[in-house]
Length: 119
Image 1 (cartoon, rainbow, N blue to C red):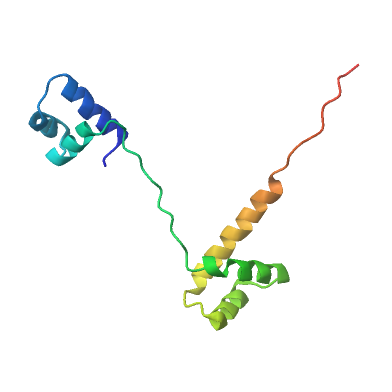
Image 2 (cartoon, helix red, strand yellow):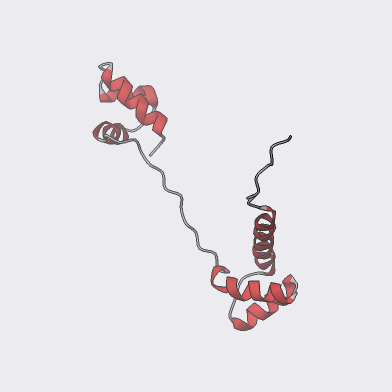
């Protein structure tokens, strides 16, 4: 799928009376794409891919080690013993993401008090 904008353009050009061949030349799309867009009643939807990191299965262990005060190199060595086969830099990046997320959580506050009216 190209984009929602292209889908709209294909529909608009077809409503003006252009043939599929003319639409393909004008928008530089393939005939099959133009036909697919003309058949569909809904705009194309894009799904975000969910990628799984190799360190995701060790997240609880990493958080536990961070709680104990371990540094990245020590965590990497401990993970190697458990069976992790990735690189040290990957562990450092993963730890940085965890620490950054914790910092963001610490900054978020919910204010519940009400302001008193001034007299």
